[in-house]
Amino acid sequence: MEPGAILIGLAILIACLPFLINPFQRRNSGHLQNIVATEGPDERREAALLSLRDLDIDFRTGKISEEDHSVLRLGLLAEAAQFVRQEQGEDDSLEALIAARRAGRARLKVLRRTNPITTGFCPTCGQKTYATDLFCSACGVSLVT
Image 1 (cartoon, rainbow, N blue to C red):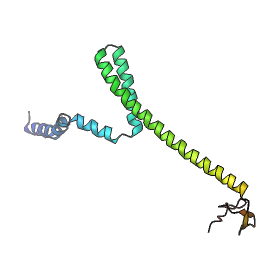
Image 2: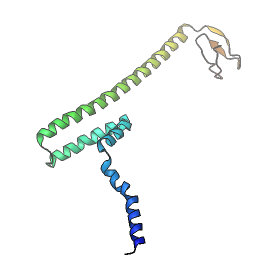
Image 3: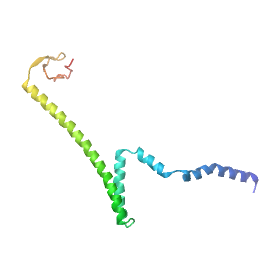
Image 4: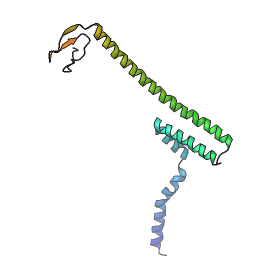
């Protein structure tokens, strides 16, 4: 062999060595924790449900024992239940906001029926306005000054 070919081969080996050693130096657990930390609630919920499904499949195929299955399943069910409770809390808060908005509109309707005192006319179109009006019912201009 010629010395030039040997030197080129050694140079290529030295250049490739960091790429070959890199996977062995990584710590996979830290890498996975970073991935889990960057996931949103929807991705974590989906991951918990998929893990639960995979656990049941592994148990049915005999890959894990019944004792391990019951312990792991309880943990995954608790995690999935947490996501369900969180979603229900969000739904409840939205329902409370909707109910408050409807109650406010109902009070405004009652106020308009019981107090139909006109305060004047719209400065833009001349439509009759009431004391409880925030906007003109005809042209939409703001009546609040």
